[in-house]
Length: 75
Image (cartoon, rainbow, N blue to C red):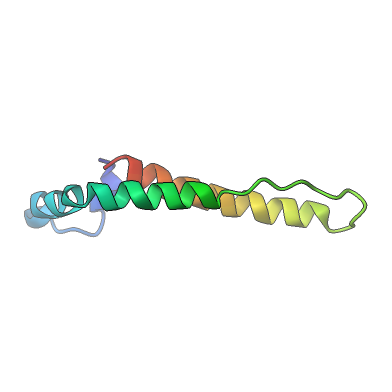
């Protein structure tokens, strides 16, 4: 489990918080599956002048999804 799960948790309640997170492993696995299905592949239309902006937006969206997925997979 990544340390970032505990950034906001007081030291005296970390173990209790960790147990709560681990108790929901099945829900986290389902959420990972849902999020993985939302990752999109962008096929740019180079005839559009704004294709690079659309590509950058899609890359950022996918990066954020992957960060959340990695965090959930660390449970």
